[in-house]
Length: 306
Image (cartoon, one colour):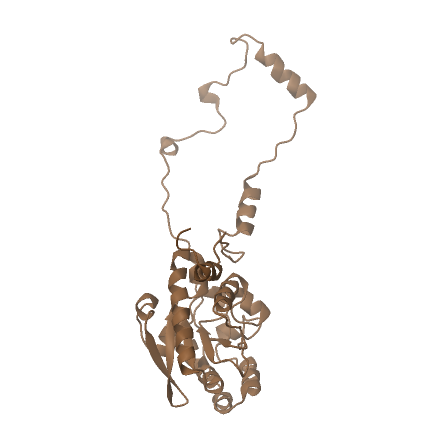
């Protein structure tokens, strides 16, 4: 290949070139489990014919046409109307997940007041005790606080935990987490030691729906305190929800990426880069090159400020 180089190899490795497997929930009609169930339901088992039935069938085949029993048209057991002969039409509708109502959000003022000045460990405990968002706290398996070490100078902010994150209690796991770690490793960055990862919401929304505004507002104190404690040099906003929550804008990710924004943390403007969420990149692999450029911009800013 004419343009092949070490940089190209790193790019291909980061983009996870190869078979792309999209993780799906079991209730997704396109998941392997659902497809297997549909196939099983459509199978019609027929009992083997007896020897007598087989002999009867063979003997009928050699009978003259006049001797073979025929059912007169007017003696069918099921009578059909002219309407039944008309071709049926079906309306195609998009498949959408059911979106649960936001429910009641009851903020615990005392808990949030303690969170404003809590250290990292105490803040994690307070997050696990929070039940402000009833729809989330009643359906979650665990709270997903984040992964970080004191040496981390870059922070990636995602939107909310998914199914795998809810099961493991860690942000960005599964196929999307693998893709993110491939990109970080290709840039010489380590998850945790160099890059902290947190989410706007700490609980998984039911059916992986988008977080509601009141849920984002209820969790904002935890996110703000996390950023204050981490005191990052550079922030990367992964996806639309995180960008809208922290940049206070409704612009699309495509229009926000490719430039440097700033978020105030501890009274200082922190350079911020917007990029696509890894789960979106799995669905739209052609956009991986854009994410690669975004993370290269973030690392460039990090090196300039270190």
